[in-house]
Amino acid sequence: MLLSALAALTLAAAPAPAPAPTPDALKPAADALYPQLEALYCDLHQHPELSLQEAKTSAKMAQKLKQLGYEVTTNVGGYGVVGLLKNGAGPTVMLRTDMDALPVKEANEVRCASHETTKDASGAVVPLMHACGHDIHMASWVGAATLLSKMKDRWRGTLMMVGQPAEEGGGGAASMLKAGLFTRFPKPDVALMVHDMAGQPSGTVALVPGFALAAVDAVNVTFYGRGGHGSMPEKTVDPIVIAARAILAFQTIVSRENSPFDPAVLTVGSIHGGTKHNIIPDEVKLQITVRSYREEVRKHILEGIDRIARAEAMAANAPKPPSVTVEAGNYATYNDPEIVARLKPALAAALGADKVVDAKPLMAAEDFSEYGRAGVKSAMVWVGGVEPKALAAAQAAGTPLPGLHSSSWEPDKEPTLKTGVVALTASALEFLGKP
Ligand SMILES: [Zn+2]
Ligand SMILES: [Zn+2]
Image (cartoon, rainbow, N blue to C red):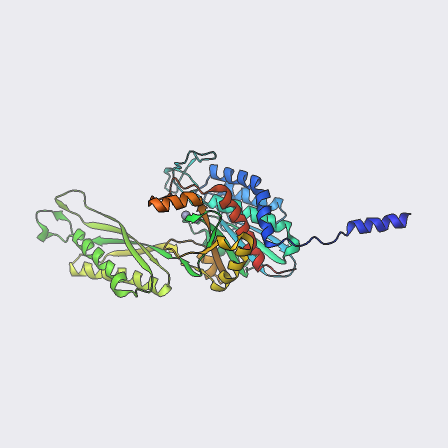
């Protein structure tokens, strides 16, 4: 009797292994998670935090991962969070979310709209909004962390969840790397991320093989002249004229010195000099943004700005050479083509072939590029954020819709979030080992 009861218990305790979920089972799994992820999204959207101030947001991310059984380390390079889920021998796959918001006053009057403000680094009170969708990324990332922790029978290896602070400026990725992201923790074989996208229908994902986002450099130039009375230019060196000539000459770096097959942008976005009609000022300041993909192109443009600025100052007999400084910027984001080639069918299987589209590179930037530069094969996936009918109508009418960083940006929440969850989960499963 006892023996047969034991035999029955043993039988009951060893059920047949559950069949591994097929890729198309990820969508219903994301549907089931949606109510809790929507609540998280709503909380994050209502309580945004500026770059380098993500104390509460990172604590929320750490808490979610801990609840799911991840080994969590906080304060990695600022408010960075690392969560590891080890599941036997196999590759290490990193999924990254960004966590910071922007100093933008939200114009949307929706449930969960942000009304918060904070003090920025200069002490000025600024409004706060998740206007770049980093709240969608975090909710998608927690969704993927949840699904992957529940389907450990489907993969082998180490899942590395990285919550990165200060993407919008502040060098979050570089700080995490400097704090030992790839030495204190396993160096991943692949790093992946999603980013929401304006101008792309919700429910879709888009991939760009190779360079996807540009390197960005911010250049400050100050021309020095010798000020004086506007009626006696012969007694002065006019820095406004030097700046005017230099601005036109700078344009020839891209149009005459750079190959038309190498995308590059040089925009003088700000010029400040002088106070009144009849005063020739002592100096003029310029702020320039430089965008490029290839490192040689980037170096050539930066050297060109310095060369032309000096030459124009010398030509005008300026009392001293100009000051040219380059602020720390972003490197170009390169999607490893082999990774993209594997992501395409994996995402098509999970979302439907018609939901995976090709996209063109942009001259915007992301510090996700840092992980690639640190030697990890990486790729980012764009997740469409606009309701398809509204997008089609706007495109037909030629009306612009709000884009990222706009005070009116509002992703088409439910399909965007669910697609983010499925995209991150399917992408991770593609590169994690198979049982
Ligand atoms: Zn942004
Ligand atoms: Zn962003």
